[in-house]
Each structure stands twice: as structure tokens, then as C-alpha cells.
Picture (spheres, rainbow, N blue to C red):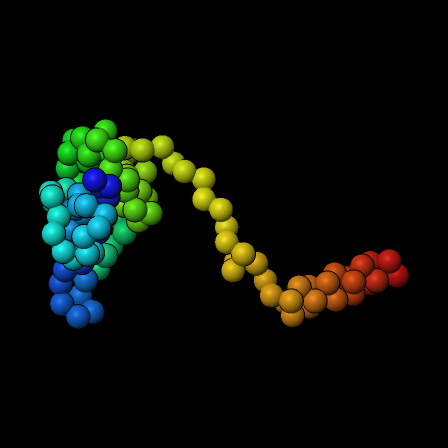
Length: 117
């Protein structure tokens, strides 16, 4: 059985509240889960202790059994010091488009000409 540690959404419209859960990867996002491991409230300030609460011992237990955290939960675990920080690649979408690259090249050429004079 493929296990995931992921977020299950709760709360009303425009007022999200998430539970950090261990569940079978085949179950729906807000569906059946095996154990609730913590909570995440994105509406609180980023430096608030109440924003992310986790039972770290149970998370370590599930990780030892082979559960894979999702990207967002992995970031929470990195911040808590449970797992080592993973290097992420910057996607191609972050690179400027053709027009922006042409503008940058023109600007570089103009500054090069001005410094040469």
C-alpha cells in the first residue's frame, strides 16, 4: 500500500484549514485517512506557532514505514528539522520569455556602447 503524508482540506469557502494526515495514496484528498498527524492554518501569520502543528514522533514513525510526504508537507518537515532540505530545481517557467531576453540584450548592448565611448 503506497502511503502519503499530505494535507486534507477543511474549513469553509475562502477560509481554508488543513489537517496533516497519513493516508493511502489512492484515497481522495479529503477522503479516508489512517491517522491525523497535525494541522496547518494558512490564515495565521507566518511566524505564528499555531500555523503548523505536528506530532513529530508520529510523522517520523510513518516516514520509517515508507510514507512519502507531499511537496508542501516536506517543506513543513524541513522547517521542523525532521528531514534534510532537498534541492529544488527552478522550472523553465521562471526564465524570461523571448521578448524580455531581447530587451535585456538591447539594453546590454546600449550600456556597452555608452561605456566604450
